[in-house]
Length: 260
Image 1: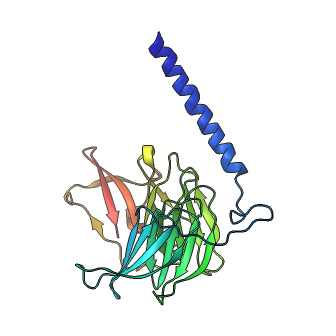
Image 2: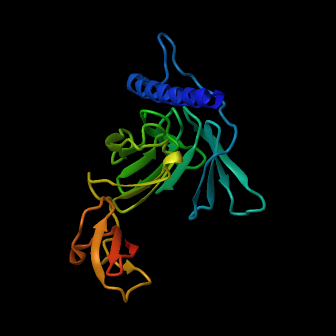
Image 3: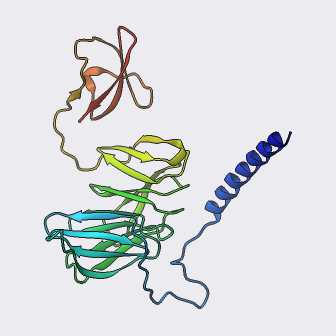
C-alpha cells in the first residue's frame, strides 16, 4: 500500500513541477539581471570547467570556467600559457563554439553571448540574447546560432548582426535540451530523458557546400519499395536533398540513408 501511495505522490509532484516550470517560463523576464536602482558593476567569476573550444590556426584554447572564459596558448601542449581572462559572462559557461574570430557562449541564465576574440589579449563583447530558459549548448552554422536551452528546447538565433542577435525560430522539445549539433538544415538535439531529437529548420538553409547528395548505405543491392523523410512523409527518390531518410526494402527491412 505504501508503495502505491509513494508512486501516486511522485506522479503528482512531477505534474506539479511541470506546470510550475511552464508558468515560470511564461513569467520569466530578463532585463540584464538588474533590479530597481541597482546595476551590475563587475565580478571575478571563474570556477569549474564545463566547456572548451579551439582555434587551430592560432593554437588557442578557450576554456569555460564558471562564469568566465580563459584564453590559453597551447602551442606547447606540455606548457599551456594563459593569454587572457577578460571574458566575464552573466551566467555559468556550459557551451562554447568558436568561428572566424568570434566566440559564441551558452552561459546558462545569461543566454547567448557573442565575443570578438580577434585580439586574444583584449576580447570584446559584441552582443547577447537572453534565451527563455538556460542556455546549455550552442552550435553556429552560417548566419544562425542554434542554442540548446533547457526546458525552452531549441532556439534559433540570427547572428547576422552580432551586436543585435534576433530569434527567428524555436521548437519546444519534449525533454531538457542540453546540447545541439547542426548539419545543413537539420538540428540534432541531446534532449536529456527524451534522448536524441532531430528537427529541420525551415526559416532558411545556412550557407553549406551544395555538392550533389551522396547516399551512404551498405545494402545497395536491395531495391527500394518506399522512402520516407524524418517526418514520416513519403518522398520521391529522384528529388532527394541533403538529410536523413528511412528506406523500406521489398523484404520489409528499414534502413537509414544519410545524404550529404
